[in-house]
Each structure stands twice: as structure tokens, then as C-alpha cells.
Image 1 (tube, rainbow, N blue to C red):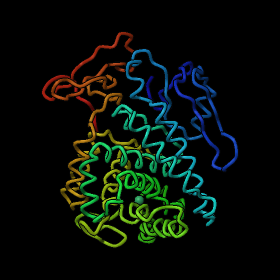
Image 2 (cartoon, protein in one colour):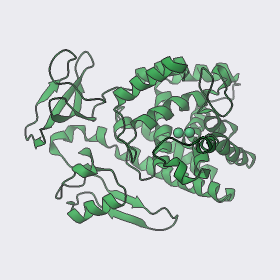
Image 3 (cartoon, rainbow, N blue to C red):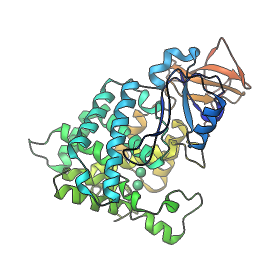
Image 4 (cartoon, rainbow, N blue to C red):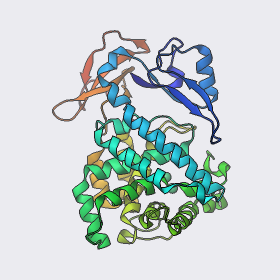
Length: 379
Ligand SMILES: [Fe+2]
Ligand SMILES: [Fe+2]
């Protein structure tokens, strides 16, 4: 199975994962459903394009050994459930109908995501990102998944951070802390649903007024979450990611220009995951960066204005594999392939699937060495 851009899918290619494009209106049916195993027609591809689908999962025997890295079924199901709860919450927020929001369902869905992350092969968390049509919803799920997976990988360290900085009592448990982080990460941009759509999707630079409006989203979100808190729908910690995720460690962020430990730990964690998700996501107007390039960009940001908590960034750089297995890459000799392994020095081994657009039936594997041979194009 491979995850490939829609414009590279050919009629006759076989769908490896169901496509379900939901209608935006709650309670209504799907706009389009295509079952696994379907041989795609020209008409299917045209409709998918019109509906804004950018990727498909396609059967490919040559990469069958990497299937669970490309798409983790259980993880995708957990995300779908979480996405449904996110939608209900967003609707409740937009219409000021707090009763519509169920804390139990939200928490259960976050719990479901945590459980499936525990069982998921490491790289799947970065390569199986399903393409949602709605950037904000997809981004929210990305950030929740990343934040949880990251913190779970360094559980002891974060537990120490959390207890030392909150002075938490014995009743503090990592379980709740983790759930609150997951929920906070999922809802970190909820304030954006109150920002005019044309500002969110504008391609060029924002005007001063538009930028001022945009900068209100952390407080708008946090105010809404305070209301949920008052009704005992969520715990107090959940607000912190929304309120603090655009603060910079070195100061100069928004909304309040907090610094260092004035920024809540959840905010500092989500800040790192938020930027990584934004850099690696495909948007309407540009392709996402490869993980390797995104990590370099974040290092540059850090050097410029101490954007992130240095210790959290250090762990994150260690945590993210720059060329994860299952990632599709272009090489500078005109070939295209998939990272299938790493050599003993951790350098990627690429299985070459096509050369100059010509499909290779018996794909060779080559190790990418920095000095010689083809290089991965990662700009
Ligand atoms: Fe944000
Ligand atoms: Fe964000």
C-alpha cells in the first residue's frame, strides 16, 4: 500500500483504504464513500478532486511489507472517533450550545487515541496522516496525536517536569495529565472557528487588522474552554494549550508575551507539535515539508528567537525520525521511492519504485550516503 497524491493516481488503481468524505452538516450522510478494493474510475478521480481530496491509499505489492507503517487501521479508527467528537464540540462552540458537548465522549475518544498509539508502530504516527479536507480539523488531530505520542515516548521526563512545575500533590496522576494534554492539544485552535474563514484561508500576507483578528484565537479558545470548565465538562488544565501555544519561550509571542516557565508546560509542548504539524502538512497552496526539512526549519526558528523550550525541542528533535520508514521521497537522479529501512548508521535505505516516471517492477534498494550517489530532495 502507498499513500500518494491524487493527481498521481491512475484509473484502474486499487483503493487500499476506504474513502469517506463526510458532509459538514452533522447527522447527514457522506458526500462520497468508496470501498477498499475498488478499482478507481476516471469519474471517481474527478469527483475526489472536486471534493478536495488530496491523497489516496493505493494497493502496491512492492511495498506490502510496509503497509502497517503507511496506514495503521486501529489508529485511523481512533482518530475518526476523535474527529467526530471534535466536530460536535466545534458545533457547540459556534452555536454557543454547551449542552451539546459531552465530556465523557471527548475523554473516551482521547483515551481511545492513547490506547491505539500504545500499540502503533512508531513511524506510523507520522506517515499515516489521513487527508482531511478541513485543514483545521486535520491539524488539530495531528497535533493531539503528536503531543501524546511524544510525551508517551519520554514519559518519565515529562512526569518529572510536570510534578516539579505544578507542585502537584500525590493525587496527581500522569494519566489525567496526559488526557488533559491530549484534549488540550485537540482543542488548541478551537478559537479559530470564530475567526472569519477568509482570514484563515488567505494565501498572501495578512493585513494588520486581519493579523490582529487571527491573534485572538488563543484567548477566544481559552475563554470557551473556561466556560466548559465551569460546567465541569473539562478539567482546568485543558485550557492551557489553547491559551499558551503561541507564546514563545524567549518572549514576544501572543497573546500575552509570556516567557519561559510563565508558559504552561502544555503550551510549550503543543507549541513544538503545532509548528511541526503546520510545516509538514499539505495546504491548498503548498506541499508540506519533509520531516527532515521541518526539523531544520525549527532549529533555525530556535536560533533566531528562542521560539521553543530548548529542552522540549531537544527531545523532539531526538524523537522525530527525519526519514521515517514508509515515507515517499524523490531523489535528485529522477527516481522516486519509499524509505524501507535504515542502515546501521541510521541512514535511510530507499526502495526505488520508479525512475523518470517509469515504474520498476523489481525495485532495487539503495542506501543514501551523504557523499556519493543520489540524494533525497528535501526542499
Ligand atoms: Fe494556533
Ligand atoms: Fe495550531
